[in-house]
Image (cartoon, rainbow over all chains, first blue to last red; front, side, top):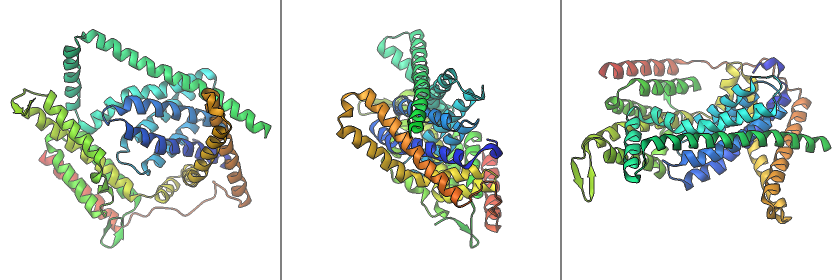
Length: 203
Length: 233
């Protein structure tokens, strides 16, 4: 974020996209978090919100063609989320920031982004959702949460009569599903940026 | 009302230091010493006016905490306790309690720090660490909230009244393009206003955050409490 190259317009556009993402997190995100139970919401709510967030941030990058733009949008959104009404915001805050960092890393590869980089950025951002629950649980609850999960997998395997080997396959499929959703988000972000650019050019 | 020590109000750096202190102790302390950390966090929360402690009145917070205790009692250790039709484990229950204490301490530390800080203070903080652009963007984003909400509502109702949602995919695309384009147009108006006022991000401002006596006392107390908890552990 080299500040000398950034204009007032760039920062205002960062604010616009940060506010858009923030509004969706605060309204739609909070609403979905209420609908889904605490221990299941990461995989459902997190996936939806990560996909929408990736689209908005990537469209933002189209209008702020500077390295660091997506990270700046993510930081603004994280702080807006922090000050939103609602109970536990630590999880969504970490997720928004992590998604922004991952998208920024992908877009850092080339000064001028391509559709491929947008797809990679979207895939990386949404795939964070897969690891988020485990990392947050480790931070919040400590080592013992690993024991709980291991025991749950064993019990589930026993009850359902599914071999643990298949549990690994299920985990891989769940991860690939996130990569797919993220790739679609990146694709949409690229197209949407172009469409909005055209609309604005028409006046 | 923000915490004041010796008649002085603490600045945002003290609250961020408190958050870092809590995170460090959560990482370093063994589970069975989490109670000490929780007591310290509750003490800071009470001194800071209790605003951050409001999280304790929310049902969702307690559901999260209770679910982890219940799961641990059901899944961990040897099941040596019959409670109605449930067979529970005393060892698992204790592990669940320690886990919950850590989680409550960390969530409270976040709520206390964020409950005391305001957006204005965050903007000042960014300015003070030479990230004026980010502070400016944050301030603009905060003021854009109501305008963008109106733009979202107007676009949604326009498309709905024209029967656009009969084709959901096209309608969603149209909705997103309209909302983003209108938001950017409004952004351009803000740029014009800033230019008309000769706003310059490079201009120097006097926003240094002074560390006062209250901050020094608070930071020393944090360091001492942290060392004491770690030694006891």
